Image (cartoon, rainbow, N blue to C red; front, side, top):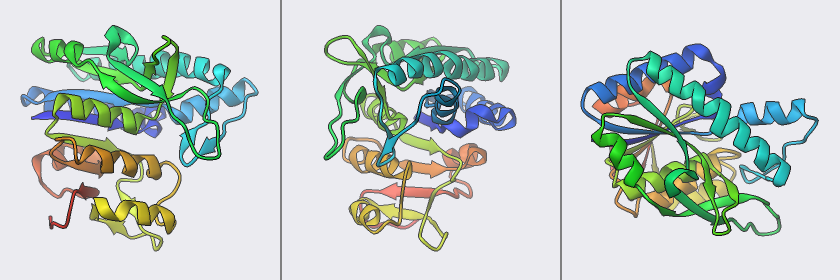
Length: 262
């Protein structure tokens, strides 16, 4: 299968979790799956900005990104975070290639407009050149991609990693898109795990406050991607990657296009 795995930024700063996720990705690769990894690094970016005396502001789960924040994001995401994941995968026994969306014209983006708020240097992907990823797959390499892209003017844009992973999954016609997140799935207002979320329910869940903060762009990405040829979207915990792909004790939340059962 073709798998796109988006790893949440929390895993970056927990060495044990990072090592375990890398081990599972390596096993999937050795089992013959073509795997592309997408990562963010939001918590580390927030920490770095704070150390520099710079604030972090968000709008509906998206980081408001002025030019300075964008430059720090380049340093943290395409630098530290990307190379940490490459090192973890190489240690787990696979050959990994670190990239960001600005490399080899992998992902092009346009500035994202938000009602009532200027997001600054935040982008939404509109074009993916999958050629470099196809080369990596043929050579038995796991591409590890930081969620930054270039705009029409050549400037870098900070892209929400969920949207970024969805764009890659669509371009690759992936069999599965898996979001690995500390939350381990979608939880309702009574803190009950929702095993299935239907695409038509998502906007109402956001309006009702059932989902908040970073889960909002994640579910909106799921809603968009289900109509673009990706076979399945799962939101799972870091420990559940292998089981989810194998279809055993899936856990987490499956996001589907219409009513269906597990």
